[in-house]
Picture 1 (tube, rainbow, N blue to C red):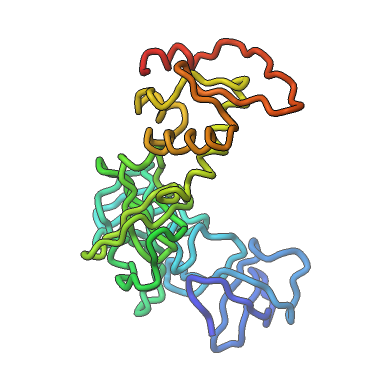
Picture 2 (cartoon, helix red, strand yellow):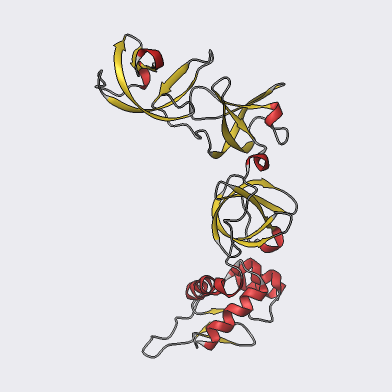
Length: 299
């Protein structure tokens, strides 16, 4: 049985001038000759993506679509009509985003995150940008502090709305996010809070002390690059710390405090410095960094 909007492993039944027919006669689908690999013969098994053409007939291709049914993808708008928009799909046929399935208006060139869906009454694959309507409301399998896969699907003044594990939605608030995220970007994050109303707050870094190890590695890496000294400490401004280390002042203080206790760094009135370990060659003097001037302005 054909699965429209997905990959199918099918057997070549017969060869014609314009391609190959796959599957038995009652459920056959055409693979046009231009998509057939060289040497394909009747009896061979081939993996193809099956969708419907402009006349709603099943058609097979060896091209790779940017989304199969059930996938979320960030696609570019190619054309807009009064009844909907057409999105780049990676195939000769564009993916249709009906007007009724638009979260907001789009224009050619826009990038929009959509879910690929199947209209079972017509076997047509279509897109929807009403992401929240297609999400699981049962949050029993999520836990605070859990690491999750994220995909950014909307950017607002408050922050970044994200798809969680291809199943739920949540929010990364700008105040808790120390780098800019882009539409369709995929990254990992953590469940910060699951509210009583079912809304989920997210973080890019593990909440609490769990993030110190990663943060410490970042601080040490920057210190190594800067020759062992950076003119920032726990008295520096939050803006200067965020700009240099992509973390909050609270996390920075916790991180350098941990490194200080392990005697890996020194904290002085002028900044932080690596402690020379026994048998280690003295750190080479570094050239002045452009960051130094910027730091003085924000310290």
